[in-house]
Image (tube, rainbow, N blue to C red; front, side, top):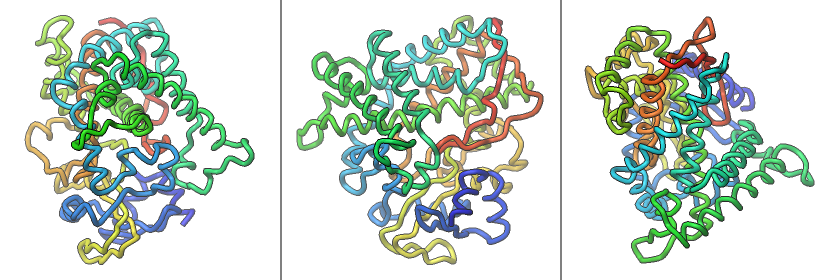
Length: 425
């Protein structure tokens, strides 16, 4: 159990294909959070995503609950989960989402421009800084630089105190008389919560167009307002779900484009057709740039598994999975099936222009009724950031060989952070 958990943590891109080849699909592994039946077969993924939502719940609530909060959408099930999604979805879609385009572009322009004279820039670190500032301004609602910097510092402190072991091994979530990594994490958690409450108080006094303000003013169908504790939990969930994830895909896209000159030239041509200093919403509509982002997420999904725990038995192909056992739609295994993606190990964005893939074949944001609620916002942001960077700067990779994925908390990111040099075009 500990050994298989360690391998899931350490090397899923290597070990999952080996297990599937050895044991067939689906296959079962024991972990410290419970037994999991894993599949990368689109037909079986369809069974998982199309099943009655009442038969399963979120995976590893004991591990994630103390971090995200019990009112987080990740923790909720059934009617409360549906109720919360209805309130959270509007600020992250449509016109409200597009209202953040200028904020995203402005932050990206400034952050890349600041690194022009640097001899070595870690793309992942730069993209994380952009993503974090977008969250503090567009999601949390910081209106001045001082508030934004305080929130960013608190988030960085919390992320630095995190460890994948705390998420995958909940028995390590012990304070030991105020000492140790979990105690340090909890102190930083409380500090961030206090700053989030300040933003909620501000939003109730003087609402803006940020997500915090929209949640503070929103009401459920029965007219009840969202409690402050629930807003804090959801803001924190958006932070953990959206901070590293968007930044990681941006880093992978820059790495992959600059190792494939033809693809990079095609993106440049698309951007140049928009003219100098292109409109950020126009950038987000570019077809080939969109395909690049999709292909980066196909090859290197940020989260490799979509996990759920069963409340009732479920037949998954030849296997009758009992209640209490986890089921996993393996994003990584589905995305590397040769019959779906010929030459699957190769970066080829054109495949997303040539055909459409079903939600059971391509699932970087999960699927079913628990699909990531911020998927549209994340895609919108990563395209604008990439478009701004590539239209204004010449980026040069500094590593000789391609990056390989490594574990960062619950996510997988490019090892080494994709070091680059940034110069004006």
